[in-house]
Image 1 (cartoon, one colour):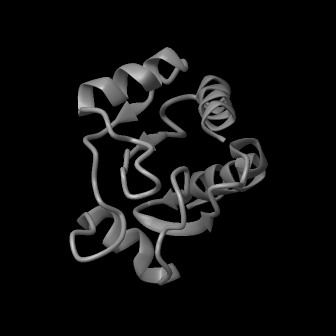
Image 2: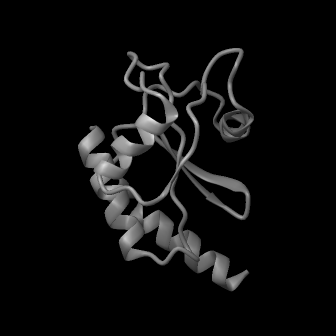
Length: 122
């Protein structure tokens, strides 16, 4: 799942201009210890997979120490994050849709394009 998610996220960011799409990565080590490294090591790993998008410091996405970003993201969906690579489509600060970790980034492309088109009209 890691290789395909990185590859497809890289592809999306190369297809859609940065003024229309921003991918933000928030590493988390709450899922089977998959992100044990330092922030610098995690960022280097992602860069090695071709990621040029922003990778932030490691955070908690569930539990009492949930980062405020994820408190906001989950406020509409309610459920805890199940695994790394959960995805959220956000437009104008509002969560449009939440995707499971197993959802391919390519599968989200129609929703991304729809959100871009709606933002143009607004």
